[in-house]
Each structure stands twice: as structure tokens, then as C-alpha cells.
Length: 128
View 1 (cartoon, rainbow, N blue to C red):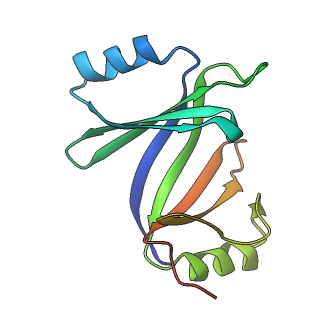
View 2 (cartoon, rainbow, N blue to C red):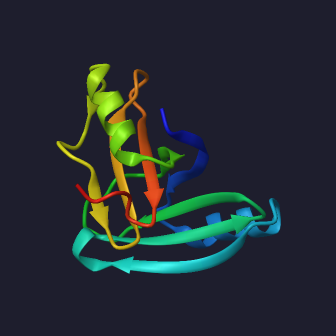
View 3 (cartoon, one colour):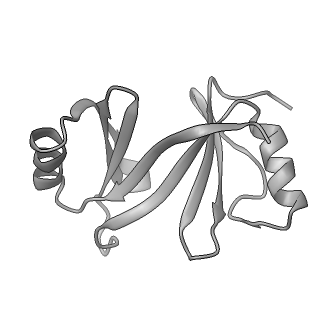
């Protein structure tokens, strides 16, 4: 496998203000950027502390999910090899192929405890 480390933890935060305050004031994280995705019904707040990252997802669509852990993300240095390895092991893949958006490539798998696990590579990964 080409997975190198835990990249980030993603939390659902229907009211991001108190969550931002908690991670900033008590844990020393800084808001590095806010991204808005109106078509996907969410805003994403990227928090950073040294080499640690927490992603807050604010659902903006009606009837969106309540708060909690959304997923764990692991960094890959060869997204296509990892996708093939997960598929070869019969993992419960969420995507039929690697997703490529902007500067990253990723896929999700459903873990055995019902959690979602994201495998992500920045720089878009290799093009097929």
C-alpha cells in the first residue's frame, strides 16, 4: 500500500461557531480556510495545528445530518495503487473509481464499524 499517514479527521458541525471556538481556544487550532460548496450543500472549514488537520463540515442543505464524526482520511502517495488494493481485498468501496477534483484525488470506503474512511492524495494523483 501507498498510504503514508493519517491526513485529517472530518466532523459534521451544523453550528460551526462553537466547534471552531472549542478547537481554537482549547486545542490551539487555527482556521486556515473556509470553502463553500453550495451545489453540494456544505461549507468546509479547514483547521490546522502544526501538522494536524481537522475538517469541519457545515451542512447547508435542508434536512442535513446531525453532528458527529464524518470520516477519517489517510494520505496516499499512490492513490491508484491503493484503490486497486482496496478493491482487490473486497473492501466496501463507496466509489466505482478514484474521484479527481481540483488539486486532490480520493475515494471512500465504508469501514467495518460503519465509519467512512477516505484515502486522499494531493496534487490530483496520477491520471489514467
